[in-house]
Length: 125
Image 1 (spheres, one colour):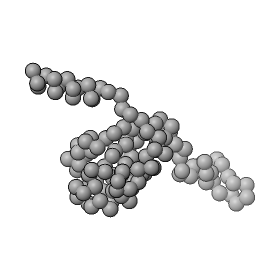
Image 2: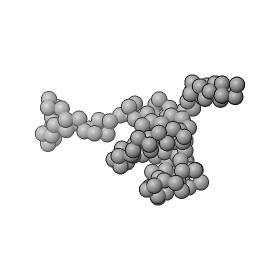
Image 3: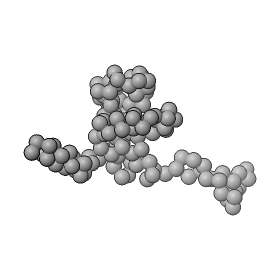
Image 4: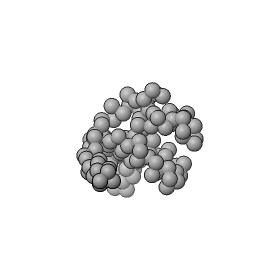
């Protein structure tokens, strides 16, 4: 009986809609007393993990309140680390703040476009 109740509660938690946060909200949690990170558009509260992080708390605090996706992937975290992340997941970014919805910061090299002043084919967007 207890097993069925626990399984039902776990299933409900998995099916519950994720809370959404703006990037501005995430930016407010940028210190040891409240440390949030964005990784792949998901928001993690890693405050309680600071002391346990194998790379040291400084690594997390440097990214606190920001998007840590690139740094997270550059380190090459293990599958165990990726599984552990689920314990700290508190939501996701609002649609308008997700990386896929942000304008690109990379130059657009258009072979047909030329800057009239200097002949460059790099068009910044």
